[in-house]
Image (cartoon, rainbow, N blue to C red; front, side, top):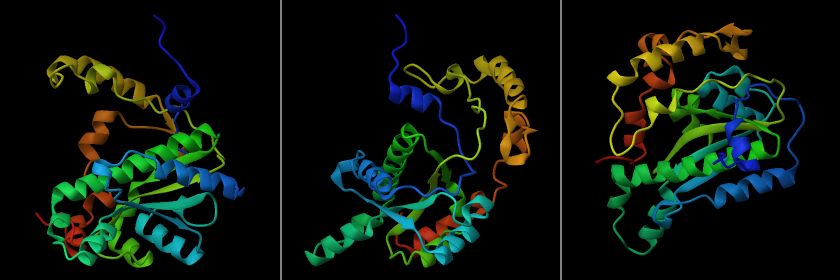
Length: 253
């Protein structure tokens, strides 16, 4: 049987991260549609623990750029959004009813909020790319989440999980090769790492032949070399996130 294919599937399989955008602005009906798509994403237990903030003020966008450290975040190209885990709204509802807010301080509720937020964000990515737009996730805002919290005037029990730029692409990168399915997918149990070492070596060769437009078309290091030398060294990976979550009264236990 031939593998099924739809326009949506073809869009998902053609996903490429775009970091360069034209000066063209997104029409407001497009932005409205993307926000509606986000609003209709699945939500854990119907708690709807997400808030999306659109950044239009240049000074605020610059603050997000400073937190991110990524040069393409600053300026005016692409629409900037920040997807926020939001337990504050439900805390206020419980406070108004005289109900204990302690459950909102658990790691379980925080993770549910993270799930809601990422599902909303990915819904937006698929919708935007189906319209011919480019997107880039900005996990880099975790480099200084406290700065983002201050810039966006976020209340306690909220956390800026990811940013996203959406716009008209001004670059056409190659499809970035992903790990083979036999490495990342199992049936009934975790796949044996020892059984896929040859596949991992072959994947390393594929990755080194990929040219990254972020660095003037430079070839990438192999995947395993990146894991050995890069993992844990990025600004966002060294950020004091635990302290920020505690200050925000999130995931306390």
